[in-house]
Image (cartoon, rainbow over all chains, first blue to last red; front, side, top):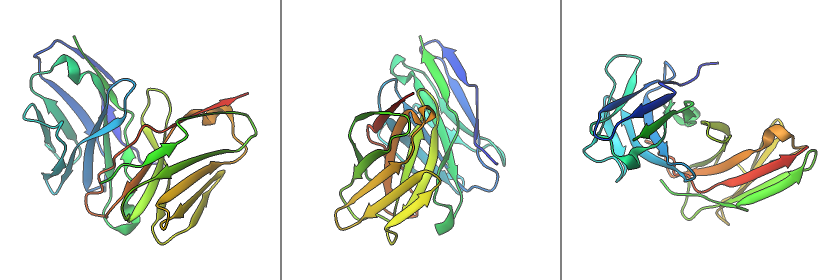
Length: 115
Length: 112
């Protein structure tokens, strides 16, 4: 069964460094999402992406964050200058188009630790 | 998007028992999805129920939806230790970008 994959599974970085989290959505999906979950807290929406542009973003998704679909398969989340509070689990999700494809499928996540 | 609120926050049962968890939401929806999250892992989609459906089954899962009360329930029958996880509902208002907003979930513990 097709699945969303994410790399790396764990990332440790120093405060102020840039990180890029990578996701490979399910191949025929058209909508892509990033969520994050700080330890012990709720899963929070960051951004959605459709037709090569951001379609919706939350207040969390400030200028330090960016997303890109550099080729036909990858979907990336970049944090330009990481802060301690960016430490969290980051989940990518994707879904197809149309009424029969409303389910969002999540990847296993990347655990980011900012020191 | 809107957030669903799950109830109870925690549920502890024995293997073989049924587990019922509830979800309430505030405004009209297009569909409602249930997800499971094992500790520290990704979210696994369980079932989607549309606003024009009242009940749906998938294996040991039974979901109901009452749009007049703006509530949904998830029943897991004959629970197993492997069902131990947090369960979240995600009501979706439209089928556009369909951003999901998660609540705190129900933490289910199934003891052998």
